[in-house]
Length: 92
Image (cartoon, rainbow, N blue to C red; front, top):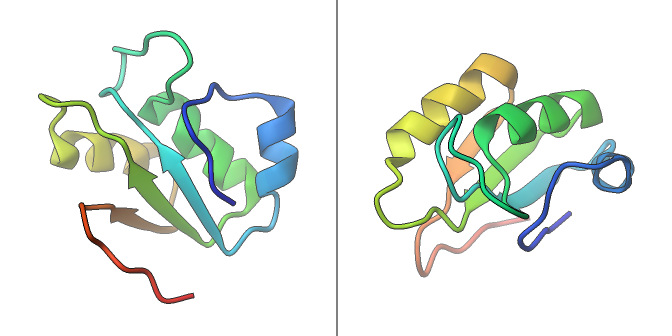
C-alpha cells in the first residue's frame, strides 16, 4: 500500500489492513502535524492496527530529524521500519 500526503482515516486503515508493506509519508515529528500530513502518533498506531509487516516512511520535511521520527514510531509500532532515502530501491 502506498500513500501520498494524507491524514489517518478508516479508508486508509482498511486499505492497509494485512499489507506486507505500507509506504507512507510522515512529514513532521510527533506533535507537529499540519494539514493532510501524517505524523508518528497517527501513522504508528495505524500501521499496528492494520497489521502491516513493514513500514516505509517517506517525505520527511527539511528540518525533520529522521531518528526522532523513527523513535516516535517505535513507541506505537513494533514491526520493521525503513526510512526511505532518495534513490532507494525496495525488493518486494
